[in-house]
Image (cartoon, rainbow, N blue to C red):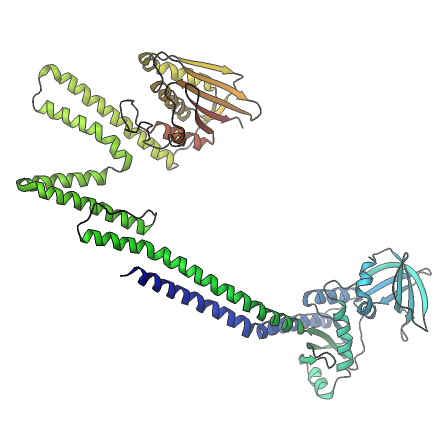
Length: 581
């Protein structure tokens, strides 16, 4: 298998899948989106109109309620609507109007649809609201004197509109209510009146269908602009007479938008194609690179070259496979070497190899290293006793065996405690107590250890406050920190414990400081790791299981306390901040 073979195949297959999917999306967008959106908008507008017509026919709406429902329809569909008879005359109140109370106490309905068509933006800029005093020039409706059609509207010193040449009169009054368009521009109102002029009076065939209760959805192309619109007519039987709810929805926006989208998708299609090729190349290299390395490892193993095999450094199944291959290569290398030297001891060497493999499976990482030494000591001294060591040395051998057993017991206990802490199996039983009292008590228990090292322990407090924590686990923290400080202190020095209150942060600060060797700066963040020792040899002469600080970390994290370690001028300082909240 050549490198370029699998990489090229992965690249080609991935790119083909991405391109096919991308092309499918582009085709559906460019070919079907226009008709889909037009159908969706038509269906939506028709459903809204049917709902409005049904409500108007079934419910005894007042003029105000009908206006509210009409405005709601206009806002939802962005289309104008009205109710007319077969001749096209409007039968309902203008949805865009002002109810004006004149000085004589009468109320006039000021129709605004025609005015909005010409001066919509300027009218909105006046900011008319209930209670405003307006002056209007215009003319009254020929058949209904309570309806007024303005040509000029004046608020304060601002005017909107243009004076008529004749039949104009002036009125003044206060605004009782106002209804103006919000979601539809001036074009929508004008389009409604243009459509009414174009379609009414209705022809006989269309009128027959409507009178039979059939709602109509009709295409209408404006003859003077060529723009596409949808005309919706819903028949209504109100008070024994046929009325018709009439609405016009512009479809030109959809066509214009789709034409712009076609050009836009041309550019985005080019960029998308380049991106697909780039992602496919990255993906193919990402997958093929570890496979190629695994193949190279296998080739070396085929030629019995186990020394130069290097694993893949990644945390996944391929990384695990390469590590297993590396372990297999190392084992095979040792096995071949053993076979060369075995001769007549082949059976014995194979048995030892099985024991080594069993030990490797049972003891992992750092735990195996910590248990190996005490087990070896116990075994060798036990064999000495079995071989009949001299009686004057038997007591010493037994003491060593017991001492190493105790160390193993402590190690296993620490490992179990650490496992419980990490698994969240510990439930804290918090109580309030003084850290200084606990520190004094732990110091007394460590008196012999400190005396042997010639390291006295001093506790200094300042404005101490009680803390809320689990007493037993916190005692474990103090004990581990003190043991660590004593163990790494120079003889005839002092282990100093300082406990004080940080008023600004509202917390108690506990510090343990010893004089001795400093911790290398690059290792400060690693000392909390299990089985970690600052000695490169991981010597056990300094004592401890290597789990003390890891247990401290888990307990403090469980409590939510902050902690840390830092080098001083002549030693090391550990600190814990106990929150008082």
